[in-house]
Length: 245
Picture (spheres, rainbow, N blue to C red):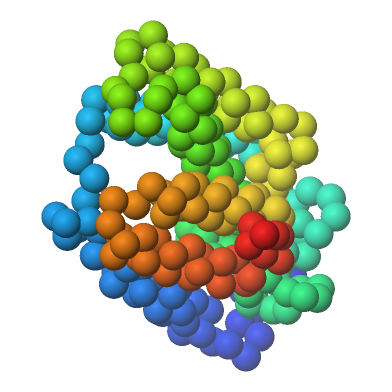
């Protein structure tokens, strides 16, 4: 098994359209879950703090993603990365317990190399960069939720100085984690840890959203989303199951 142009029994359709259809099928349930949040009765009215929180979060995401892409491994690095890259490229089976969702995503990203096998590793590595940047984003939003609870009483709008303090806390905390040695190391190579961290960060953030749901119906949808994301995470790594406790 290597990075060549042989399909190894899967054929062109099996290695291109097949993974795309599977990923599309996994995304379909999101439509039903997220469509419910469009209901006016389930929506939270965004205030000035929410808008600032949203845009600062995306700014932190952009900074992290830019740094990860600039420091991305151009080819395979040590340990399991070469195995995951080659297994994803040909939809083979890596070491137990396997990582089917990661491999499907890896195969789709490898198509961005447009047949240039020397670029396959780079594009599969970029999955970790993207997932890690989203991990930083959801970590930022989780920190700002906790920080607001610490400095602002429930039901009261934060002052400008409090907003600055909360945004600073989220930015410093999220970027400190983003550029920590272990996390940055995993963010630039084809390993399952970055994508697994994304699922964990998302689930923790979603738990806080569920806790603060304006109605029971909205809360049930958050629970469905949390359960579904936990199920998907098993196809990457079992770390996310620790969030259940």
